[in-house]
Length: 112
Image (cartoon, rainbow, N blue to C red):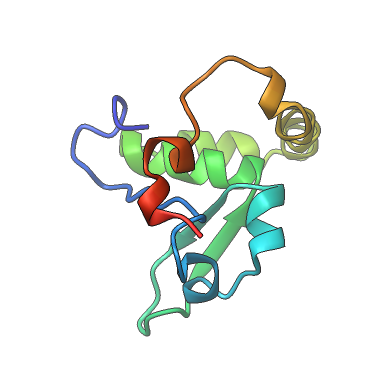
């Protein structure tokens, strides 16, 4: 996300940090199951809009790239459900996939 978000419009926060799930009105279990994205509201902890899973990825991409296209594509009748199925498959198998070192392994002092 950092590479795509040249204007630093997206703030990525690991749910493992103390108080993060509660500050977003979510449980730890919600966060373990899927990524979440929020459009800030007028009051802290009360987002104007929020997305889960594939929707969160598309919303984050839309903001990072400065275009609504990822969300518009996601909102097409067949596309959203297909993306959610793909997201759920990847989420269920994320430990088996190559990628970054988990946040808590990089920053053990910041995790519960």
